[in-house]
Image (tube, rainbow, N blue to C red; front, side, top):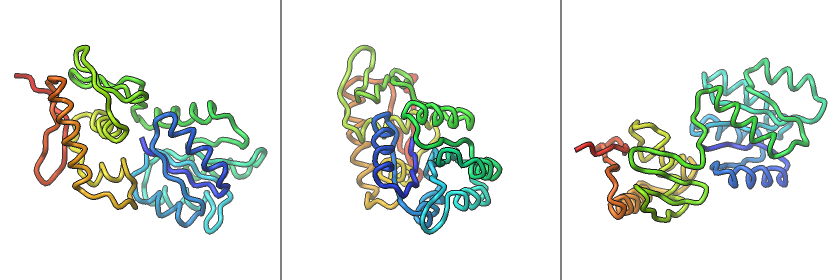
Length: 226
């Protein structure tokens, strides 16, 4: 799952990024409100962490614009301790929650999980399953009927995305945005390379699950029931 952090305190933003990455979230960080709005409106994020006091555009204004566009992405505001009016304004304009600085990493992670559950998102466990596949994303490896193979981080992220999509077709553009970010220079052939890697590993494990190409649309996980 991909999270956008909009926070102008660079040391705090970097600390938040490391905490989230350690807990298997993909993260993008921006340090001013105008860039934050551009990133948020891309639609690729599963959750936004917005500081309220930002240069260029404040967090409440970003929130109002996002909600005005009809986007229901969960939003958690980062507020200064005791700023009750900011908290009220944020909740009134559609924020899902707020965290007052300073906060513990455990509190933040719990609030992120709660916000995603309220939206109906699947919050990944350590082991994700599809058909005969069992993916351990925290220590990337793939297991099929007791036989296992190591995955590199991008292979793990790609397979996790396909599993969480629940047999919905996932386009190359969606994969690039989720794995590399919407402003990356990754191209379709980058996706094709990692799809090929995963297919070879599924074949090595003699899995009954395959990655099917839907021509001109994208990819989907399917079970071979024959």
